Amino acid sequence: MPKKAILILLLAAAVLLPVRVRAMDPVTMAVFAPLALKAASIAMPYVMRGMQSGAVHMVKIGYDMVAIFRLPLGLGQTLLGWPFGYFEKGIKNTTIGAVAPLKMTWDIVLLPVALTGVSTGGNY
Image 1: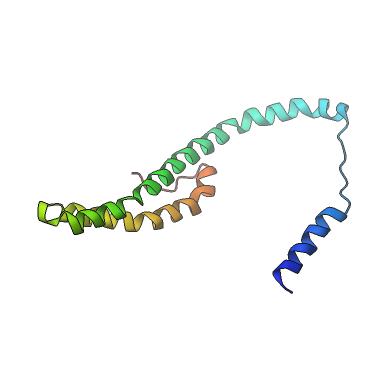
Image 2: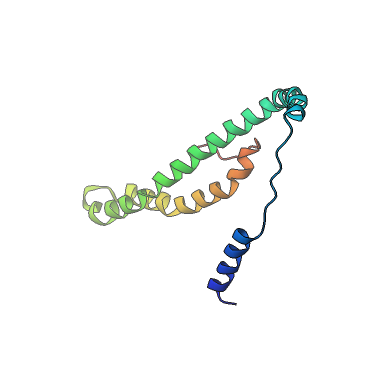
């Protein structure tokens, strides 16, 4: 089946098939509210740890995203700046810039794990 036909079938199924939505009784909500508050207060330290770990991991992703721009910088330093002593810095920047997309991809793959609060290693 072509991709268009599958897409049309999925969209038609989503629009035409009836969906039953049931509202919860307000009395039931009032009964479960104290239980939900207690569960939320118990889970709060774990949620906060996960959010903190995820935020640190997103900073790592941002650092790797910015490090990608060291590739053209390093190439320019290597090719144009070698008479002025920038060859070694250019090689270093080129290497960091070439590895940065791989590191960024790895960090993005590990982001769901980091959001659970598990340390994924790699301090930089």
